[in-house]
Length: 223
Image (cartoon, rainbow, N blue to C red; front, top):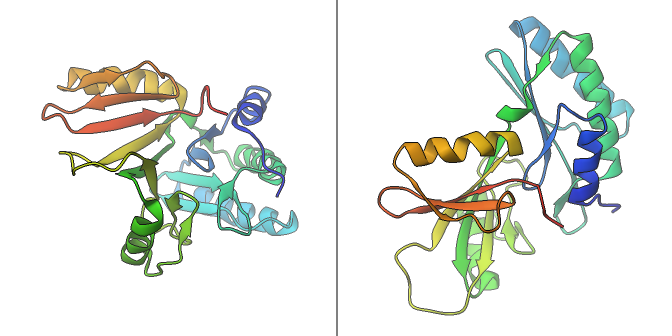
């Protein structure tokens, strides 16, 4: 599979894919629709365009006044990547959105991924895959993915073997870079603290008032 690196994806966004933002795995867009009819017509047009392009129909969520679209390709191992075909379809979808009168709100895209510190993901992975997806085989490299995306993905953060600490689970909240710049201070103003921002804007570690940690992640400054 011909994968596209994060830097190339960010360059493509800067050169014209303004509707889209890169999250953990997918390229994501959110569109605002004036009514259910225009949103539904847009969804139908995207599905038809995907088939014509020889692309799997992307993940689409149609809700009151909005349409979320996520684009990625799946390789033979089950891993999810953005490919040139995804970038091409993103351009087509952006054009269809304009034709149907939808408005892009890229700062609103988001993805929650759950992280677990473990010294042995090969042992922990099948359990979480079976529990969350119904199939212990839905492990890919260092992650668990539900093929139908009913639940967030779980990735295993490597750590040395040690006694169980207070917190081994944490959430990764993937945001558009411009959203992260406002969301982090909002969380701090609501009682949180910045634990580590030395890797920002790639990720910033926050803690709630009780010390529970969460990472706010963006695609910036990643390989």
